[in-house]
Image (cartoon, rainbow, N blue to C red; front, side):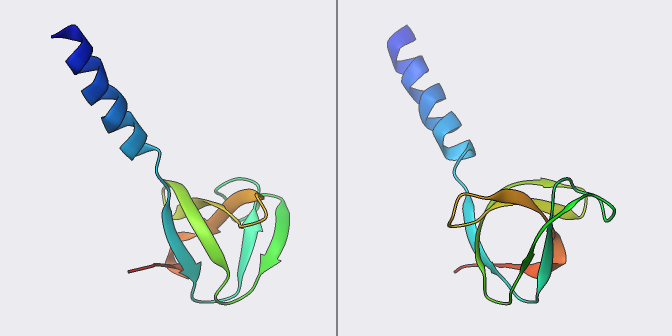
Length: 81
């Protein structure tokens, strides 16, 4: 019984860390933290592909295809269907 329970927990946790894929619908700033005055890491172009890792307030933490990570305003992201 215990073995089966751990398998279920592991499967649930694996699903929780899966990133949602999306793209930017407008040019956006990649920031170091979820604040408008956080350090600018990069300027991202329209249609840039991102993996959304988490949400904090009105921001998404994203990972770019080149492995860079940062924060963008959530109204700049559209999720892939």
